[in-house]
Amino acid sequence: MQIVIIFKSVTYAQRAERILAKKGITSNIIKAPFGKNAGSCAYGVRISDKYIAPACDIIREVKLPYTDIMVKQSDGTYRGLEL
Amino acid sequence: MIYFDNAATTYPKPPSVIKAMNDALITCGNPGRGGHVLGRNAERIMYDCRVEAAELLGLDDETKIVFTNNATHALNLAIKSTMNEGGHAVTGGYEHNSAIRPLEAMENVEYDIAYSELFNEEDAIRQISSKIRADTKCVVLNHISNVFGNELPIHKIDDICYEKGIDLILDVSQSTGSEIIKAWDFKAVRFMCMPGHKGLYGPSGTGILACCKEDKLYSIIQGGTGSNSGDFAQPDFLPDIFESGTQNFIGIAGLLEGIRFVKGREDEIAQHKRRLIELFHNELADEKGLKFFFSNKQKSLLSISVYERNDDLFEHLCQKGICTRNGLHCAVTAHKSGHTIENGTVRISFSAFNKENEVKYLSEILKKYLKSL
Image 1: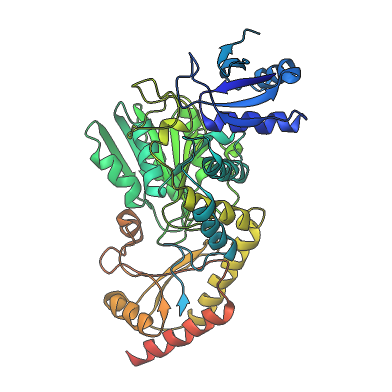
Image 2: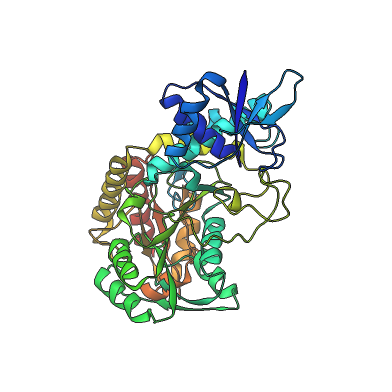
């Protein structure tokens, strides 16, 4: 299952990607699905669902604010995920 | 051709800069908008450049690096953000017009210029301190004069500003890349402003606004940022608040390689330029009719004068294939402080690429010119 942590700008998403990589978590940057908080034009880091909990811990630890966490459903749409 | 106008723009550029720009033209699309492969390539270059610049400048967070068109653009953002609500500002006596004119243009801003004796740091501190008032909001200070190469005491002024709760804006146009300037060494500095095309060996059309503090930001330019697009209001966070419109990612690709060229070599480059200054001075110090503006602590460049013949000397050097710079160098305050406002000066400015034999050649040309007078 693919999960996307959404940030308010591409620079924040890039920072998250680098920080997660340093901690051994692989992610990749995508143009974010239309998030209710970020609006359009946001960017996110896509990660495997098994890493979502440690990834969120790392991102919170470095005080990098994210706006949404979304999960891609089988019909191709995204829904918000509460952690 | 011999090039001694590096204080304006360094030339030549490292081959890696040229290659990176050429590659970016082929491989990059609009960054921060589409998310496709060409956009991602551009975004990666921009982010890498932020990381390298943040490391170079001692910033803990690369989002504090804002790309600008040049140092003038950065200074406008810094000054107009800091002085947005009006108030009193102080500048040093060796400022470029890119610091003075934004202050002059702001109707709600009063400012004083602290003219001081050339090569006298104590006098600079005394004069700047004397201009600070109870309602002073910020000091704008050039680190190294683009006219004389004299260094202003930025750390001591930082201490004074911090004690008084005043913001400090640093213009590090002539020092970045050949002086070690770290944000962590300052307490009152809000912004550091620099071009990409001088000591960072990037292309023209690039510059950096290093934001040492993240509060009280105000942008004079609003527009598309690729973020918060559903909101009419400009994003309030770095770097987006200051980066509206498509960024110069081709130039930034070159700037990235320019920063890599100087990073970790700042001392070596500074010493090389200092050796060239001393060689030039030693070759010509005894020549009559030539005024030298020289000190033992001068950095990167120096000015000379043959008084009312400065323009003639400049033209003569051009004819000999030697590029220098005459006139006021867009820095009237420096010429008032240095008492050279009447004739300006002829400026010789060095880069990492200049050679001793070039300086000797210039010296010989100058000696012959002086003999001919």
